[in-house]
Image 1 (cartoon, rainbow, N blue to C red):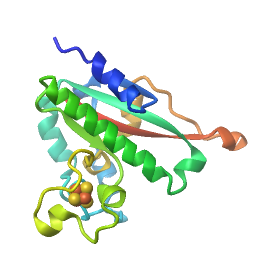
Image 2 (image 1 turned 180 degrees about the horizontal axis):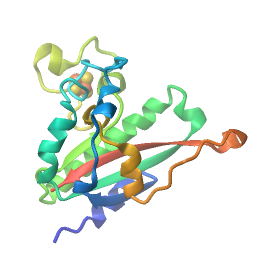
Image 3 (image 1 turned 90 degrees about the horizontal axis):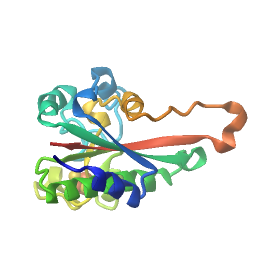
Image 4 (image 1 turned 180 degrees about the vertical axis):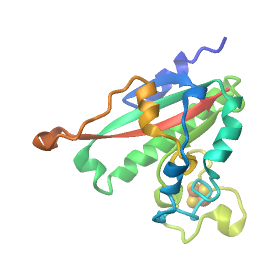
Length: 192
Ligand code: SF4
Protein backbone atom coordinates (compact mmCIF):
# COMPACT_ATOMS: atom_id res chain seq x y z
CA UNK A 1 0.00 0.00 0.00
CA UNK A 2 1.27 3.46 -0.86
CA UNK A 3 2.40 5.62 2.04
CA UNK A 4 1.31 9.17 1.27
CA UNK A 5 2.69 10.60 4.52
CA UNK A 6 5.91 11.75 2.89
CA UNK A 7 4.00 13.67 0.24
CA UNK A 8 1.84 15.41 2.84
CA UNK A 9 4.98 16.32 4.79
CA UNK A 10 6.65 17.54 1.62
CA UNK A 11 3.74 19.91 0.90
CA UNK A 12 4.11 21.51 4.34
CA UNK A 13 7.90 21.54 4.08
CA UNK A 14 7.61 23.46 0.80
CA UNK A 15 5.40 26.11 2.33
CA UNK A 16 1.80 24.86 2.42
CA UNK A 17 -0.16 25.77 5.55
CA UNK A 18 -1.84 22.37 5.52
CA UNK A 19 -2.27 19.35 3.25
CA UNK A 20 -4.80 16.53 3.20
CA UNK A 21 -5.62 13.40 1.25
CA UNK A 22 -9.07 12.91 -0.20
CA UNK A 23 -10.60 10.32 -2.47
CA UNK A 24 -10.22 11.33 -6.14
CA UNK A 25 -13.84 10.29 -6.65
CA UNK A 26 -14.93 13.09 -4.30
CA UNK A 27 -13.67 15.85 -6.61
CA UNK A 28 -16.50 17.70 -8.33
CA UNK A 29 -16.10 19.61 -11.57
CA UNK A 30 -18.75 22.01 -12.84
CA UNK A 31 -19.36 23.45 -16.29
CA UNK A 32 -20.41 26.80 -14.82
CA UNK A 33 -17.08 27.13 -12.98
CA UNK A 34 -15.03 26.35 -16.09
CA UNK A 35 -17.11 28.87 -18.00
CA UNK A 36 -15.77 31.65 -15.78
CA UNK A 37 -12.45 31.41 -17.71
CA UNK A 38 -14.10 32.71 -20.87
CA UNK A 39 -17.25 34.57 -19.81
CA UNK A 40 -15.97 37.23 -19.28
CA UNK A 41 -12.73 36.17 -20.92
CA UNK A 42 -9.79 35.93 -18.50
CA UNK A 43 -6.59 37.52 -19.79
CA UNK A 44 -4.90 34.12 -19.36
CA UNK A 45 -7.37 32.46 -21.76
CA UNK A 46 -5.57 31.05 -24.81
CA UNK A 47 -2.19 32.36 -23.66
CA UNK A 48 -0.52 29.16 -22.46
CA UNK A 49 -0.58 25.40 -22.29
CA UNK A 50 -1.92 25.58 -18.75
CA UNK A 51 -5.16 27.45 -19.41
CA UNK A 52 -8.24 26.88 -21.57
CA UNK A 53 -8.89 26.09 -24.31
CA UNK A 54 -5.86 23.75 -24.10
CA UNK A 55 -7.04 22.77 -20.63
CA UNK A 56 -10.14 21.11 -21.93
CA UNK A 57 -12.67 21.58 -19.15
CA UNK A 58 -14.85 19.36 -16.95
CA UNK A 59 -15.59 16.74 -19.58
CA UNK A 60 -11.88 15.99 -20.03
CA UNK A 61 -11.38 15.85 -16.24
CA UNK A 62 -14.23 13.37 -15.82
CA UNK A 63 -12.54 11.08 -18.36
CA UNK A 64 -9.24 10.74 -16.48
CA UNK A 65 -10.63 11.13 -12.93
CA UNK A 66 -11.49 7.39 -12.54
CA UNK A 67 -7.83 6.48 -13.21
CA UNK A 68 -6.87 8.03 -9.86
CA UNK A 69 -7.38 6.75 -6.35
CA UNK A 70 -6.46 9.76 -4.22
CA UNK A 71 -5.86 13.48 -4.44
CA UNK A 72 -3.49 15.44 -2.25
CA UNK A 73 -4.86 18.92 -1.68
CA UNK A 74 -2.94 21.71 0.00
CA UNK A 75 -3.62 25.31 0.94
CA UNK A 76 -1.96 28.56 1.82
CA UNK A 77 -3.72 31.21 3.90
CA UNK A 78 -2.67 34.66 2.77
CA UNK A 79 -3.57 38.01 4.34
CA UNK A 80 -6.21 39.83 2.33
CA UNK A 81 -3.96 42.85 1.75
CA UNK A 82 -1.37 40.56 0.09
CA UNK A 83 -3.96 38.67 -1.95
CA UNK A 84 -5.33 41.91 -3.38
CA UNK A 85 -1.98 43.16 -4.72
CA UNK A 86 0.56 41.93 -7.26
CA UNK A 87 2.20 40.03 -4.39
CA UNK A 88 -0.46 37.41 -5.00
CA UNK A 89 1.60 36.32 -8.02
CA UNK A 90 4.33 35.11 -5.67
CA UNK A 91 1.75 33.02 -3.84
CA UNK A 92 0.38 31.60 -7.09
CA UNK A 93 3.90 30.80 -8.28
CA UNK A 94 4.49 28.95 -5.00
CA UNK A 95 1.29 26.95 -5.53
CA UNK A 96 2.62 25.87 -8.95
CA UNK A 97 5.99 24.96 -7.44
CA UNK A 98 4.60 22.97 -4.51
CA UNK A 99 2.21 21.09 -6.78
CA UNK A 100 4.90 20.31 -9.36
CA UNK A 101 7.38 19.13 -6.74
CA UNK A 102 4.82 16.83 -5.12
CA UNK A 103 4.04 15.41 -8.56
CA UNK A 104 7.76 14.82 -9.23
CA UNK A 105 8.27 13.16 -5.86
CA UNK A 106 5.17 10.96 -6.28
CA UNK A 107 6.40 9.82 -9.71
CA UNK A 108 9.85 9.05 -8.30
CA UNK A 109 8.16 6.83 -5.74
CA UNK A 110 6.27 4.83 -8.34
CA UNK A 111 3.07 6.83 -8.85
CA UNK A 112 3.83 7.27 -12.51
CA UNK A 113 0.64 9.05 -13.46
CA UNK A 114 0.67 11.63 -10.64
CA UNK A 115 -0.80 14.81 -12.09
CA UNK A 116 -0.47 18.25 -10.55
CA UNK A 117 -2.80 21.24 -10.80
CA UNK A 118 -2.35 24.85 -9.74
CA UNK A 119 -4.00 28.21 -10.25
CA UNK A 120 -3.13 31.37 -12.12
CA UNK A 121 -1.82 31.71 -15.66
CA UNK A 122 1.71 30.33 -16.05
CA UNK A 123 2.20 32.89 -18.84
CA UNK A 124 1.70 35.75 -16.37
CA UNK A 125 3.62 34.04 -13.57
CA UNK A 126 6.64 32.56 -15.37
CA UNK A 127 6.80 33.93 -18.90
CA UNK A 128 5.73 37.54 -18.44
CA UNK A 129 9.00 38.74 -19.99
CA UNK A 130 8.29 36.90 -23.23
CA UNK A 131 5.74 38.02 -25.80
CA UNK A 132 4.31 34.53 -26.25
CA UNK A 133 4.06 31.08 -24.68
CA UNK A 134 6.87 29.06 -26.25
CA UNK A 135 4.68 25.98 -26.65
CA UNK A 136 1.90 27.80 -28.44
CA UNK A 137 4.04 30.19 -30.46
CA UNK A 138 7.06 28.09 -31.40
CA UNK A 139 5.74 24.54 -30.92
CA UNK A 140 8.73 23.96 -28.65
CA UNK A 141 8.86 22.56 -25.10
CA UNK A 142 7.66 24.68 -22.19
CA UNK A 143 10.30 27.00 -20.69
CA UNK A 144 9.27 25.97 -17.17
CA UNK A 145 8.26 22.32 -17.16
CA UNK A 146 9.55 21.90 -13.59
CA UNK A 147 6.96 24.36 -12.19
CA UNK A 148 4.18 25.31 -14.62
CA UNK A 149 1.07 23.21 -14.10
CA UNK A 150 -2.48 23.18 -15.43
CA UNK A 151 -5.16 25.40 -14.00
CA UNK A 152 -7.78 23.94 -11.67
CA UNK A 153 -10.22 26.63 -12.83
CA UNK A 154 -9.84 25.53 -16.44
CA UNK A 155 -11.15 22.09 -15.48
CA UNK A 156 -14.00 23.63 -13.46
CA UNK A 157 -12.80 22.02 -10.22
CA UNK A 158 -15.05 23.02 -7.33
CA UNK A 159 -12.40 24.32 -4.93
CA UNK A 160 -14.91 25.25 -2.24
CA UNK A 161 -16.10 21.64 -2.09
CA UNK A 162 -12.50 20.42 -2.24
CA UNK A 163 -11.74 22.37 0.92
CA UNK A 164 -14.83 21.10 2.72
CA UNK A 165 -13.93 17.53 1.75
CA UNK A 166 -10.41 18.11 3.10
CA UNK A 167 -11.99 19.18 6.41
CA UNK A 168 -11.01 22.82 6.15
CA UNK A 169 -13.32 25.56 7.34
CA UNK A 170 -14.28 28.28 4.92
CA UNK A 171 -13.08 31.74 5.86
CA UNK A 172 -16.02 34.07 6.40
CA UNK A 173 -15.67 37.69 5.39
CA UNK A 174 -16.06 39.86 8.48
CA UNK A 175 -16.21 43.56 7.68
CA UNK A 176 -15.44 44.37 11.33
CA UNK A 177 -12.24 42.37 11.31
CA UNK A 178 -10.66 43.30 7.98
CA UNK A 179 -7.08 43.36 9.26
CA UNK A 180 -7.24 39.65 10.12
CA UNK A 181 -9.03 38.60 6.94
CA UNK A 182 -7.27 35.98 4.81
CA UNK A 183 -7.70 34.45 1.38
CA UNK A 184 -7.11 30.73 0.79
CA UNK A 185 -5.09 29.55 -2.22
CA UNK A 186 -5.12 25.86 -3.11
CA UNK A 187 -3.32 23.30 -5.24
CA UNK A 188 -3.96 19.65 -5.94
CA UNK A 189 -2.13 16.54 -7.13
CA UNK A 190 -3.98 13.46 -8.38
CA UNK A 191 -2.33 10.22 -7.25
CA UNK A 192 -2.82 6.81 -8.89
S1 SF4 B 1 6.26 28.29 -22.05
FE1 SF4 B 1 5.65 29.68 -20.37
S2 SF4 B 1 3.54 30.29 -20.87
FE2 SF4 B 1 4.01 28.48 -22.10
S3 SF4 B 1 3.26 26.72 -20.90
FE3 SF4 B 1 5.44 27.04 -20.36
S4 SF4 B 1 5.43 28.39 -18.57
FE4 SF4 B 1 3.40 28.51 -19.51
